[in-house]
Length: 163
Image (cartoon, rainbow, N blue to C red; front, side, top):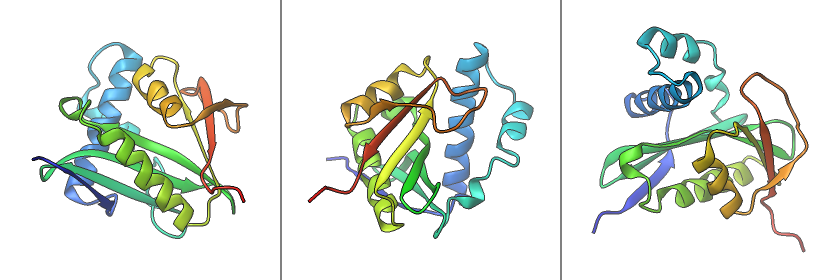
């Protein structure tokens, strides 16, 4: 039986770097409605702040399915209690294999470990699979907490049980 293994990993490891490129290629190609070029991917990843996805300011996670690097995501501390979910990606061939939910679970766990009590995120309206995933896992639409050209909708979720 093939299983998922997910764990924190350096954002610049070979597998993490490859997944980050695939993520950017996917979201940029959808946005532009054409394949992104290598140069555009390089430009998009240059200075994207990924170096903050290391403790104590964040964490990057890689998911493997049967040993193959298939998913990634990060959390970035915005302040003492809020973490932002970012760069959540599953390679298309691995979607529908329960990895997305497991990825969100470990990212929420890593955010709690960094001190977060709430997770927030922004995404685009055209990323329907992502929006469906977040809603299915308890993320509710919230007012905008940031702005940018590729942000259409914002979500949030308390990640520390009350009581």
